[in-house]
Structures are given as C-alpha cells and as structure tokens.
Length: 260
Image (cartoon, rainbow, N blue to C red; front, side, top):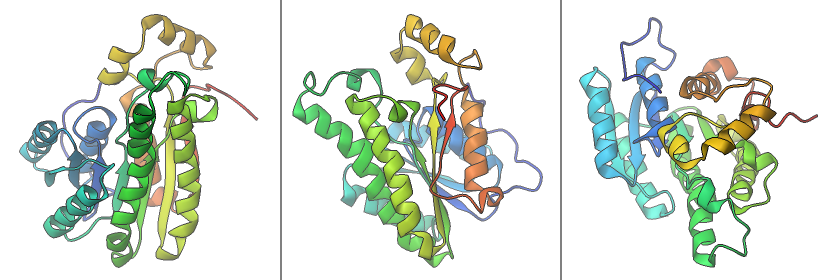
C-alpha cells in the first residue's frame, strides 16, 4: 500500500500544475494524489465520499501540499461543472485530469441479463458518462493553460470481458482514442492505464483469494500489482516525458492477458 504523502522530491515534474482527481479519497486515486503532490502539483480530491476526500486533502496539506476536497458525483454533469469551477477558482486552472472514479468489478462481472437495467445504467453513468462529463468540464481550463493531460483508468477486463464491467472499461479505451483526437487541437493529450489485479484495499476486499491465485497463474510476472506500479505509469503518462504519446492504453498487468 502507498505511504502517506511524504517529502517533496528534488526537481519536481509538476511544479505549478494542478490535478483534478476523481475518486481521489481512497485507493489508486489517493495514491495518485500523494505522488503528484510530492512532485509539486496542487490537487483537487473529487469524490462522492466528502468526508474521505476531506481527510485525504487534510493529510496532504499537513505535509505542505496544496490540496482541496470537492464533492463530486461524476455521473452528474452539474456537480462536475461545480467541482471544476471550484478547483479553477482555488488554483487558477487545471492541467491534469485523472478519471479514476468508477464502480468496481465483481458485482458487475455478471451477465447483462442478471443485473437490473438500473444497475447497468448506474454502472455506465459512472464509468462511461463520468469520463465524458469530467473531460468536457476540464477542457476549457486546459485549453486556456496552453494544453493539458487527461488520464483515464481502464482495466485489463476491457480487453477480454463481455460482462457489464468489462464493457464499461472497453468504452473507456474507446473514449481515450476519441478524446485524444477531439482534444488534440487544444494540445491536450489523452491516455489510459489498464491495471491488472492490484493490491488496493477495495480490490483485496472484493476479490476471492482463489481468483487472485488463478489470475497470478496466468500472468508472466507472478505477483499482484502494487499501487506503486500504477503510480509509476501515471507519473510517466502525465509528465512531459510522454509528450509524444496520446490515444494509448498502457496495460500494467504483469503480462496478463498478453496478446499480439
């Protein structure tokens, strides 16, 4: 698991940058916020869990970072617009958007006919419309800042699963390509990370041990992914080191599933 915010690094890559992180109260979103603040960024922790977002923002500010918590249901475009406006008002603009908020795996890893239409609609509203709402809401600020970066959280299930969750993450891959094209005139790069099985608290609580073992047996690197694996990919794709990369989905999954 990730450590607390920790000291700032020498020669930070994101000095004077602002990141808007959805689902930033816990898990990977929280790990991304910690890493970006260590690298000099200001962050907005956007989450429906207002208390959790406030705790994370308080932790970061106690370590000397610039951070705020904003209440945000990504499925509600009006809440998204308000959260983005609050972030721009506080920090002057947004340079990095991380579309991390999502409804997660096992409940939605069943056939479409098993879930109610309301459940499927709720899944797609968060996992798909949430990406659309947040990306469009941040576009003007990024354009006004001379460009920016959008990073979406896809999943390896988006390469192989025909269940509702996998389909939602397949759509995230498609949105990554679509927005990379649509936002390129604004000098906004759009990429995605597709994590494999990762040892966040939510994942380990949700996934049976037998399934974890089965997945590891199919990987080329026989271990569970760590938050730091995903943080390293995030830092690369959000930095100028990836200035010639857009429209891509980077699988971070130990070689599972490996396809040609």
